[in-house]
Amino acid sequence: MGYKVVVAGATGNVGREMLNILAERQFPVDEIAALASRRSLGTEVSFGDKTLKTQDIDTFDFSGWDMALFAIGSGPTKEYAPKAAAAGCVVIDNSSLYRYDPDIPLIVPEVNPAAIHGYAKKNIIANPNCSTAQMVVALKPLHDRARIKRVVVSTYQSVSGSGKDAIDELWNQTKGVYVPGQEIEPSVYPKQIAFNVIPHIDVFMEDGTTKEEWKMVAETKKIVDSAIKVTATCVRVPVFVGHSEAINIETEDFLDEDEARDILREAPGIMVIDKREDGGYVTPIECVGDFATFISRIRQDSTVENGLNLWCVSDNLRKGAALNAVQIAELLGREVLKKG
Image 1 (tube, helix red, strand yellow):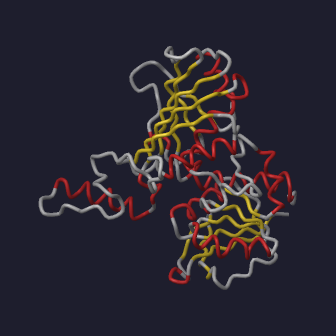
Image 2: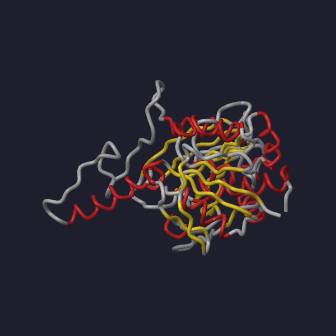
Image 3: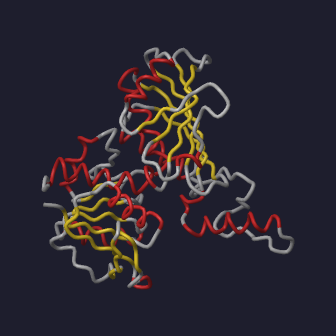
């Protein structure tokens, strides 16, 4: 016996990826519904070897459905998630709307699976920000061994994190560089993204940080440990898919780089590719379509008493969004609903 599953936002990048991953991982589905806004009504999407026609989220009845994976943004989520939850359908939400609600668990299954039981307060579970998700997968096993005090992270985030229009903007601007008269002015981003980097993701806050940077701080504290100090600089780079992060970690106890490498090799969800030679590391283009979070460049930081540096790469549409949501669904089914 399987589950009745809803994917809301099924025509978007993350929604389509949710459907792909549900099929790839052979999630036990008895029935599945693909929802979209009225303007996308009837659009066909793939689920394994099946083709689904999208239904109107505005008129959909969530009664009798087990779980709904939401990829529709904070605005629509605020309207539809409470309706689904009230109907008894557990919402797994990819937006930022509920991440900081103390009554709603924020889950990365490799890191804090026990928090899943907190879903019952509101029948909603939050999926973390893409840049946070891959980082905490790497932090947790090291924190368990040596207690992390402080993290300094610089991110190199692909344009797919901003949606399809951003992917198109990078593509068109890149072509425009080579074709005189076809230059494309920025519309998604405040400056040209092609052949450039932009140290600005989401809105600026009063203290000079951006909302994306604030998210990494707040979410790491909620998911891993509130005592960890985090400072982040988030940068958009001209890469289509795959987020990268340079992470500096300071721990309470000394942790040798070789032991850290061994710990990460054994940790769930992580693949260590770390050879000190040309090409002995993973880059974003190599992680696309993969489930793993890749760790490279593990080395001691001699500028502090107990410090490590590492390089972390993951497919942001997968671990940073759709995969993590499906893993939450698997955890929910295994630990709570227990149907099959």
